[in-house]
Amino acid sequence: MKAIILLIITTALALPAFFLAARYNLHMLQLNGYKAGEQLNWLKKNWRKQWILSFTLICGILLCLFRSAVLGVFGCLGLWLSILVFKAHRNLNQKKKLVYTARVKRLIATLSILALALIALGALFLSFESLPSVPVIIAGAAAVLVYAANLINKPLEKAINTGYILDAKKKLKRVKGIKVIGITGSYGKTSVKFYLKTLLQGSFQVLATPGSFNTTMGVVRTIRESLLPTHEIFLCEMGARYRGDIKEICDIVHPDMGIITSIGPQHLETFGDISRIQDTKFELADSLPEGGLIFLNGDNELIMERASKYRDKVLYYTENSPVQAGENAGGYRAFDIRVSRNGTSFAIAAPDGERESFETRLIGAHNVINIVGAVAIAHSLGIGLRELKIPVRRIRSVEHRMEIKDQGDVTIIDDAYNSNPVGSKAAVETLALFDGLRILITPGMVELGREEEAFNKKFGYFSAPCCDYILLVGKKARTDSIREGALENGFPEKKCLSFDNLADAMGYARSIKDTGHKYILLENDLPDNY
Image (cartoon, rainbow, N blue to C red; front, top):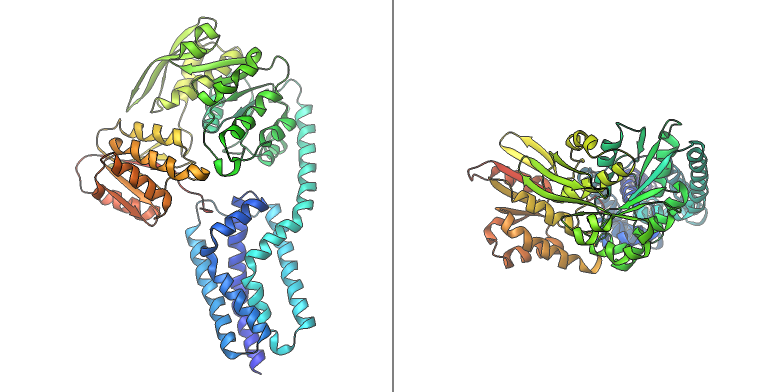
């Protein structure tokens, strides 16, 4: 009778505990790109977030081996705490919700089969008195079972993806005369893509990968779902976390021309070193056909280190840099750059001698180089610089990339998407342009490998003269490094504060009583798996 009651209780608690824990781990797996290595690495780094599963699993195993009322109570306690912990995780992790794609549904099916298999094994080999341990073990093993389900499904997913890739290749091939423009870089690629679309769409039928769809399957999905026979240009953003990622996309879309916006310390955690990032970004240049042009940011030293190999098919674009890539080198050059709180003005000189002045509502000199890159491509496709004046004026901030949001007595400068060492410096320098109370809110930068603390310290150092308050989100090593750098550069300690979450930091920022309009820069917003 006791065994029946305990079985009912553990089952009733295990069902929601397993569902919530499995859902959380599926969410993290999706954010980690379904890559087994990244998921395993994430599990190792973040085991404290779900330590309760280890406790529950141990209780379940002990309950299986030893019939004890005390162990039964501990098992039920572990299940109950698991429900509370993963409900809390679900409430906290809402930045990018779990999307129930076909792949996730297949994972859920495999996960259910694994759970049912464990129940069947328990029924076959355990005594009735030991059966209450089975639901406890299954719930405690939720993270392991999700990882196992992903490994089991890998051959099936590979076969499905191969079919999708072949279909995308055929569909792209059927659109005669379409010009594919590959866009890659450590940062700036999404902005350049949207700027270029704005410049081209008055003259061509343009398809662009939406948002940050820059993975192989994101590109494939764009082609399969959105490509029409009338499209003349396909702007294909190409992201990478490992060597070979750009080549994989190029082998599908076969770009006719391309642009490398930047090379820098982004995703160092997966690449390992800068040299591999350089190799990977230049996979785009290696994939171009004879006569295909690669547009290179001539102000980026890491790009220029590799540029000489591609001399015959390069067009440079720069800011105020005639030596590397200006008129003498056959490139596009921005000059006479003027920045204010109301926007940015500049002029561009083209290789054929044509010159034109431009204005944009975008704030910050760092935007100019990306606009010049987009103008260079549009001009090379036959659109005159004068014709591009109005389209340049129409360019708007890309969502979460220095996006200005006026909210009464507060202006939010939303630069929350995927911060990097170069972009973060440019963002706080832009904040310094505003007259008022300047507040930086940041959790710091991630995915920078062994150099993460050093880069965050530099971020704090150059932020110090640009801000009146620095509000750090998350009491971890990266925010400690930012604080250290800021204080080293003379920033007042009482105005460099730490908060557990973004909501608390925003609440404090809004409550500051200092006079003047508030300008709040949101620099980076860590994804849920951080």
